[in-house]
Length: 142
Image (cartoon, rainbow, N blue to C red; front, side, top):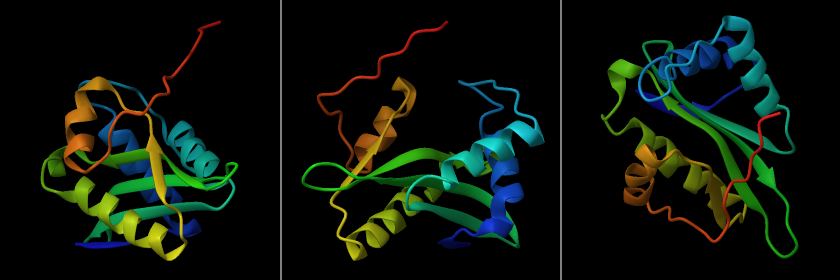
């Protein structure tokens, strides 16, 4: 397996892996090829977007997608998606993606990683060194 930067040719493979990852518990989401590709393109169209792919035998089995979020005195990197195909979860791939992200961000002098997580995944993120901050997600369904 290799972890590498993504490029425009990876959109379809990333979308396929993402839709498979979110098809199971706790999400049980129904992504179409169109909606998943739209999601990947949306993230990768952000300011200084960066994506990493976990690839094995020419197939993308996981991904990390996000973008730089400029702020007053330092930039942040916002992870919009981190996903692993169901049969490869709990094998250290997510941890490897986050570790490679840290390497890339250190090269760019970006000191902070942020993401939004469901409660079930917070133990994983804590083990990877991420902790809750003082902010919360606010939402309203219209």
